[in-house]
Length: 171
Image (tube, rainbow, N blue to C red; front, top):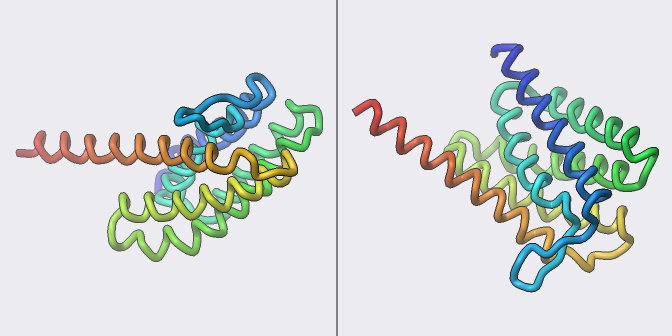
């Protein structure tokens, strides 16, 4: 697979991890709708799961784990050694293990099905560990899960739209 594509997707993944952690420092806890609240980085973290799956498509687990570690280190430096970076890195690693168990086996049945299932499993595991390590509480769990589902749904809609457009273009 093209090394430039691997590097690009890995860099995007790292950037989204860093921005997710930075946004928590910048904006704290935000409303995500339906009366639910979550740390501001939740939207970027939701996007990170889809980028992780894109990285799965063009590389292997070492690229993904490396990107998570780089994202956590950069966040740690920016945050001046804060617990958000440690919580985030740990949570992304846990969700990646869950993703390995779900995405890879389902991939043969289709990208969208694999993306949806792995994101749901990953976002729940990630949210629980992140909230516990970062805040010592699961108070924002519902908000975390709902906001990450927003982002997963948005990516799936974009993928379906792209697929539809490409099929029509071929006809």
